[in-house]
Image 1 (tube, rainbow, N blue to C red):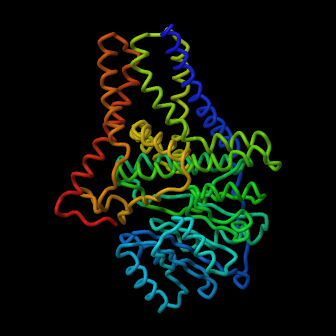
Image 2: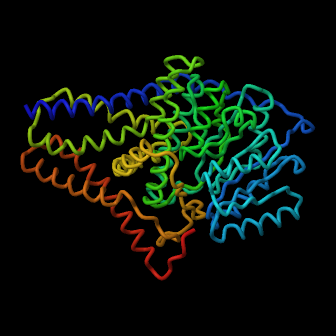
Length: 490
């Protein structure tokens, strides 16, 4: 009896993972079908017809990169009398003084720049964006996070699309990477983001599926923001929330893969975990908030609704991977005979590598060398199962929450803090769970070896390595932060 129960549970988990694998497979097929379609050309816009544009830069304790982003935005090739820069500063460290000093220098050069400081950052990033929107009069709003460095022609390659097509509510550019070669951790993140933007975004956009704004490196039409209900802080992914609400209201979103804005990747596993926790929690909140409106929408087909729900619930594959780990000991103990699982697991595990390889193949000549970092990405994903599960549970139970920023270090290429972090790491909510899962996986390895369950050993060892990566990263950062060279939280 118990053997059958364990077998059915394992098959149910595998079925759930297969659904998300098929979702990725559909996106891959759509990408291959649409990838040769040309990007819509940038409409011609006479200089006399350039509209007024506001560039918003949300900052919160970004003293290492604040000057860099302000100087990059000031270098945008747009008439100065039609360009306003808003620094939306929620900092409580030295960032505010840096931003004000840099803004003063830029004003002397003829730029229109305002530092809007909030001593009480109510509503997190969404609150800052809403406060800035209330203070500006522009019809077009560009948004850049502090770690981005847009090219001077960014506005010239994005704004004309919005001016020429009144139904277009937002255009999204592709993220590039300032420090992809910094470490294996950043290499793996670049692999994932390249696949997201090059394959998934292009597939969704050109196939008429709903697309998300990525929170930065995009330009909004003001009326699209306002008619969709404005920036709202009940989710931690205000970008995902607003972009879906805008599309439900009838606005279109365009992805421009040839317009690239490079950004800094988190160099430490703890910073990456912190980022993923916020994204996963916000995605769960957005799913709670918009699943009903999506299903009831009269504008969308059933296919668009299904793909949107799979998109919003994508992080739920992580609890399934956690369940798979927890079922390993029962599988070893009761050994249900399910030979069909071998073929199914093989098919499921082969789909993600294909996605990432296609992303590299589309962008780089040395794609095969970059693709070799997939095992690191796989270990990162496995190591995040507990962290992400906690985030999803939190998001399903609570609205809003603390917006824990991802720390920035002013990295470019291999340059930066090689040995010692320069900020005090936050409390790692998932550390104890990661430690327990690592011990559990080691026990499973021992019993699999003792009972000669060799087929399960490679699978369990991946979990061991993933948890070890997370545990060691947390211990290293906390140990380094206690050194005399530690700099206060930035």
